[in-house]
Image 1 (cartoon, rainbow, N blue to C red):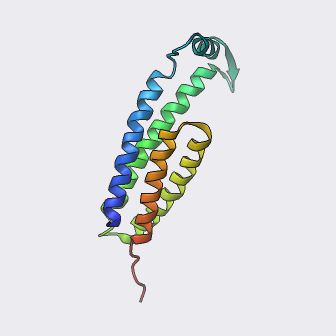
Image 2 (cartoon, rainbow, N blue to C red):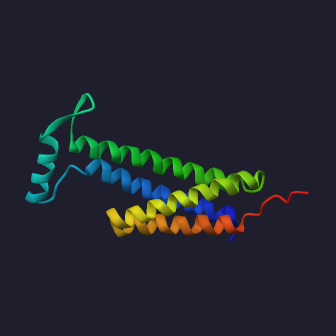
Image 3 (cartoon, one colour):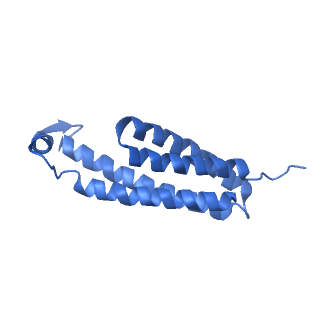
Length: 143
């Protein structure tokens, strides 16, 4: 399969991941059991000063969730951009693909450690596709 197509597929997979992440971020403070609701209440009710601001652990969870969403969408765009640039600017596409491969690999490892299978499986598939694209992208020959 052509490197361009591999990057487009990886971009689509991370876009689906971003949709799932968005649904998770918008619903994370809705517990299904009494125990979950007790934890959520403890996370939202207790506020404490942090570097001149007063926050709860729930504030941090929300903030990190939205930051993660932004970076998932940035990754979607950069994968698509790399795929679009393969024919016209193969060196830039290769460098961008290499950086994205490293980033996606690190993300999939962290998702494996801290989250659940659907998250790390989607990211690992995108990592493999990006790596295969990187291997298949021809570099410009220097005279």
